Image (cartoon, rainbow, N blue to C red; front, side):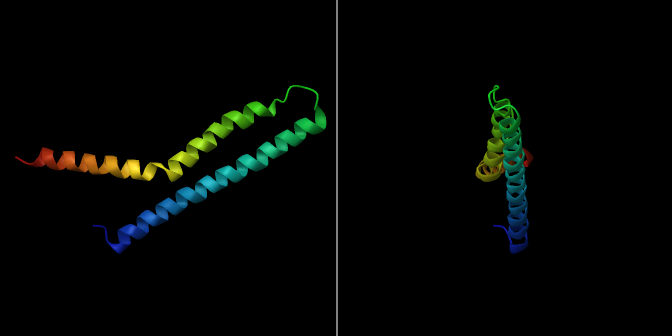
Length: 92
């Protein structure tokens, strides 16, 4: 059982991770919008080169979202298993 101070520390860490994701997402949106506008205003008939940036950076944003929103339960489960393994290893 975790005390209130530990829960606050966990909550703060998770909030910081979410803020980091939101900043990443915001930068992704602004930069990609600028790149697409640049492409459209300068060479709209040419191959849409910003697609590469949007797709590959988008993969990074999705990965960041998965790590931020879905990895906590998995991490806690692995940490508990590791803790139990370590406890068993110490016992005679």
